[in-house]
Amino acid sequence: MSVRGIGVDLRCRCIETESRRMAKLIQSVELFPPSAHCKDTEIIATLKGTGQQICLDTTAPWVKKVIEKILAK
Amino acid sequence: MSVRGIGVDLRCRCIETESRRMAKLIQSVELFPPSAHCKDTEIIATLKGTGQQICLDTTAPWVKKVIEKILAK
Image 1 (cartoon, each protein chain N blue to C red):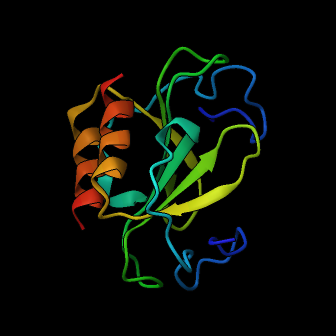
Image 2 (cartoon, rainbow over the protein chains, first blue to last red):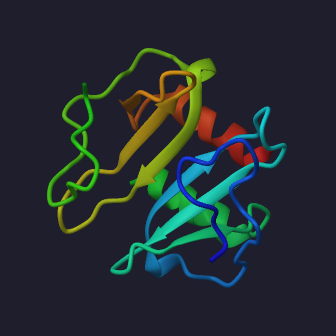
């Protein structure tokens, strides 16, 4: 797992990020701006079917595209 | 409340959306693309402090700006 437990927000949620493209598997995306508890922006995707949560690479162009596509709908 | 209970995703989550600007109150933002259960894109913000969840107006320019700002960090 690359996401810490829910409710823990006194440190960064993501331990590692997934850079492989998985746009079609994504059910929803959650964005966390930097905060007092974590200096990084974090993007966590929930996958279709399994509901698995995956941290996405915030610098990957496909990740930005996925979000822009959702916003354009 | 403008958000249905968590776990209910057989229909749209948002009953009504907030169009007032509240960028500074936002702790995180969750994006739900259209699905078999809801034809609308839904954007749900979690507010700082209270953790209250608010559905945002997906067509409001300030909402897109908030998301773009998070992505740019």
